[in-house]
Length: 291
Image (tube, rainbow, N blue to C red; front, top):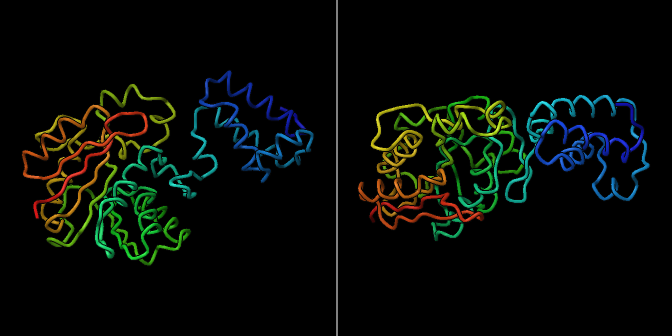
């Protein structure tokens, strides 16, 4: 594709992405042009005649080809917005999604102590833990993930948003009791919760590029059906790690809320609530240890 201006490249790139069946073809083209040239979207619209440098055209077309193949835009630019902040992402981390912001809203409105100590279980990019510390300057957190590459991205985001000194990264999984008894005020997690049969049917942009271990839980003994093993395991660990009255927040699948709530109530958790996302789907469970 030989192009010399914003408008010509955007038109051709949008057509190519639409033909390839990529999600949001026009937006993808606009974001790629913004990323490579540094031009704002307003500039692209008002001055479509602006020429593109030859080396930028090469970079744009390389990224365009990868987008045509289905690679998510966030991995091409290495950035994703979450709770009005920009976060570094990589192939080692899930791409933050808007529905996960419900975890943040719920934690911030939960009347927790001013010096809350929390754990982010399966932290990935750190979007949850970094945001909580950025919103609450006295909170401190433990960021746990099985992937050392994900932890490195989490640490980068902590430094970017000036909260690294209040975050402790730990490499581990959900099978080991890492926390001192009654040491946490809050546990928050967006763990793997996609059943194997559902994973095979999700979009290729997710299945082919985002880390499988962050989506599909490892099978382990559980009273809960497949897909919910890690949710149950986290709840069990937090029965010891949380202080009396401590808060547990977990994101889950849209069809898992009822079973998870029943499981928590059966284990003695109190104030068990299933919260809905902006699409009206069950998305987060909130529960407290007896105080």
